[in-house]
Image (cartoon, rainbow, N blue to C red):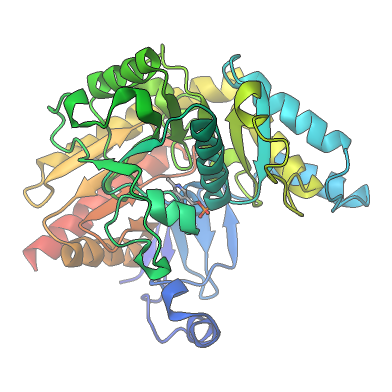
Length: 420
Ligand SMILES: Cc1ncc(COP(=O)(O)O)c(C=O)c1O
């Protein structure tokens, strides 16, 4: 099917016969194999192009990273300036760009945070938060970490231990019996039930993915409010993994704020949309938490790399301008309204949506994948989860016109696959 609109161009169908895809698959481990054989040659704003003249509306933000848009001109300029200053690596030495970025990050964050730990990836940020919680728990005789079944926190050992999939860490032979997994409140009617918890005075922290990734499942707001009130009353820490939810994805600078403005987390794990581009991640925290062990070994060779800091600083400056936020919130209303309309289609079991993220839930994974591939062949790139969901998370700069066009394509693709 040939397609040509203002935003989409499709000349050739997606094929696993893609030579570049096959060459890369030959060299990389099977477990990192990308399931979508789509070659990226260019990505700008909310548009992605390949080497066959095809063009897609990107509803993935390159998997929740390009919040400020792909190749954002202000981020590009900051990177070029940084390169031209001949400082593209600086180990752990002080640099002006690092100081400026740290200041900006703290300035847009709630005032109770006074420390930033810089890292490269989300997995590292969650690992560092895990370590800080363990150190704090040891000092305060609190051993339990409470988290949720079905959650995801990255791919290192501690990430596997705290992610809510049975057996995720079984490869290691290591089991942490002090990590307690609660059922995720999928129906939306569940109440926070403290009787399911271990003794309150032994709980170190609640480790919470701000929403559950695979289907953009949100907790009921009263559930999170009660959980956080309980943690406060009992002296346990609250840690949100904001990897997908952070940097305005849900409409506020941090996603946890969309549950209850009164929440004051002790730790925030940040990454992805922090730079809209280069690899940089962070843990936000407070002095008394991060300084428990002066030998904690929290710094890495590339932490605070000047290019990454330049990209992240320009990104935060772009996203936090009042004009951008005003226009963005208008587009969020359009996105939420249009995406929720899809719930009326018989094959869509549920639509979870908040800000510029949505999860469409189907009966099974094969159906969801078939629909995702149909969308791709029609010029819209959704997040293919390989589960019974499709996720939509466009760059926050997407235009209203492109939102309308993408949701129309989603609807037509669902109808087409479900009728055939
Ligand atoms: C909620 C969450 N936490 C942690 C991670 C790990 O981040 P990274 O891939 O940057 O290591 C991800 C990645 O998808 C994530 O979605």
